Amino acid sequence: QVQLVASGGDLVKPGGSLRLTCVASGFTFSGYYMSWIRQAPGKGLEWISYISDTSTNIYYADSVKGRFTVSRDNGKNSLYLQMNSLRAEDTAVYYCATVSYSSIDYWGQGTLVTVSS
Amino acid sequence: DVVMTQSPLSLPVTLGQPASISCTSSQSLVHSNGNTYLTWFQQRPGQSPRRLIYRVSNRDSGVPDRFSGSGSGTDFTLKISRVEAEDVGVYYCMQGTHWPQFTFGGGTKVEIK
Image 1: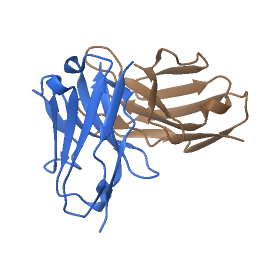
Image 2 (image 1 turned 135 degrees about the vertical axis):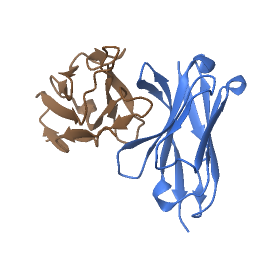
Image 3 (image 1 turned 90 degrees about the vertical axis):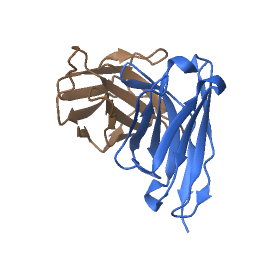
Image 4 (image 1 turned 45 degrees about the vertical axis):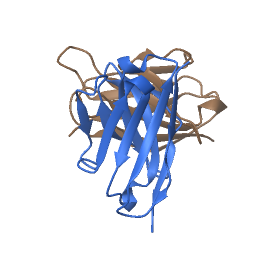
């Protein structure tokens, strides 16, 4: 069955960097568009990034544009999120998810990023 | 940007009774291809979200048939015909029509009275 395992979340100081990884299994990763979505503690869901199957098309929410970079390695069934210039408001659980037909279908278990001094 | 508004914020329901959640978009969600990309998710306490309904009214595999979605244009509804204890959680709507940005509603918390 579809599995998405996110990792890399940690406690980081404001201005710092972190790289999240999402490893996929149970489906043909190279054929899927992927997204990152985050959820601040006790808050709702916020879409932050999308990458097409061949990395040709990449989009970001305004809140992370210029600071976050999404990438993927289809040979390793892996999705990445490089996060730079982190702020307190970036504190959240970060989920990776599959995208199909303008919807999000499968979600990973999430990884917690805490930005605090 | 499209804004998705859900109501109510909180929905206390008696077990076995129906529940209804509303989702309104600031712009029509009818795509130029004729499809309407409105999705509903359920997030149980401590869990990742799970998709229930896609394209307004299509139930995902394994989703009980007590869940149904309806609506058109800018107004959409998720209904639970008879609430069970396992339905407790937060429900979100999301638009995918105005690609490539997904927009979520603020969420509706369903709890048992």
